[in-house]
Each structure stands twice: as C-alpha cells, then as structure tokens.
Image (tube, rainbow, N blue to C red):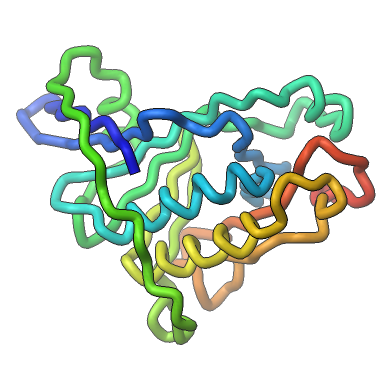
Length: 217
C-alpha cells in the first residue's frame, strides 16, 4: 500500500507519525445514528481499499497511527436514497491505532491532525494478513470505537484489525453491484468483542442502489 507518513510533534515534544493513504478511495463514508451506533458504508471497491487499511493496521509501529480521510464522492446519491435526518452525522475521517504501538487520546489525535508543519515521507508497505479464523478469546474486549467531532476513532490490537481486514475482504467480493445493498454486512458490535467504553461498529455494503432497508430503523 502506498502511503504518506507525516512526522509531527505535539506540544511538549511528543512524536506522532501519521500514516495516510496516497490515494484515498472516494467510495467510503462513515456515519452514526442517534443511539450512538457507528457504521462504515462502501461498495466493493471501497472495501477492497479498507481491507488494505486494516491489514496495514496489524503492522503499525511505535508512535504510528493511520488517518484515512473520507472524501466521499456520492453525497447526492446518499441524500436522495437515505434522506438522512439532521442528527445523522457523516464523519470526515477515520483514525486507527494499535494500543501496543501508541497511547494517545482523542484530543491529541485531533491536535496532531491539525499541525501544519511536519516532515513528510512516502513509503510502500505490506498489506498481507492472516486468513485463518480468529478465536473470540483473541479479540475479546479489545475493540474501542468512539468519535470526536467529525473524527471516528478505531483502536484495538493486531488480532482486532486482522478480523476487520477479513470482514472487509468478504464485503469486497460483492463487487460494485447495488443488488447487494444493505444485505451484505459484517458485525464488529458484539458485546464480547468491545471494551466497556465501546458499542463497536458494523460494516455495511452500499452502492447507490435502491433503499430496501434502513439501518437506522
């Protein structure tokens, strides 16, 4: 995966390395609803990109986090099909980090993303991941999903992100076909998977098609 690394320094001199995709996929968005549930929406192309993102997350190094900007290209189709109420938030980006690689607050993540002066480097990194079934005990109580303004934050461990990469890979196999809308989905919102501070997230397939079911119901 081709990425750009921003090396920034927070007040006090703390180093944070932000990994950004060189070419974000415009088919991905993330939303919430009034009950605080979080959803990723995309088509097969978007989920193929997200497969790489979560695979990259399994190999994050010290003081690294991923930021994936959501440059959603289907806003008019989204508004027409969903008729979203005002309370339904669309996020502008997703931050992903591994608890073993970095300890960082939502406030510091937001601050790091706002820093305009940084060192920049381009890299290409591996995005392979384990395909074998992951036992629940390896991911139990290890996922936290929360928001800070228009930023969605997903944190966990290597096995957590492996499981998410596997989910995205399965959804990517739907291709770009509206027939799969709302039927194809993957859950990461089970009680046993999430920490006490998180109700998790679910991944839903959407490709500008006919609205047969609303996940806000």
